[in-house]
Length: 68
Image (cartoon, rainbow, N blue to C red; front, side):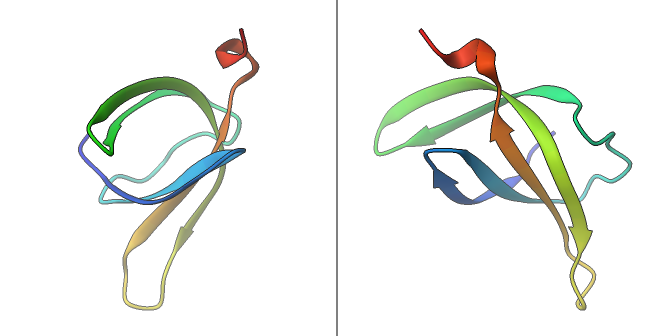
């Protein structure tokens, strides 16, 4: 699904999306570009919320599989 990356941190990321109904702790692949580099990382959904204006947000934590 196409989403808007809201923030990226050492521990994970937050995205705005139009999709709902994800399972907490579900492992997904998050692919994005940042400063000209492409990243594809396994991540775990740790929270899902809907804002007052109806926008849907997901919080991701990087999965252990990404560590070298």
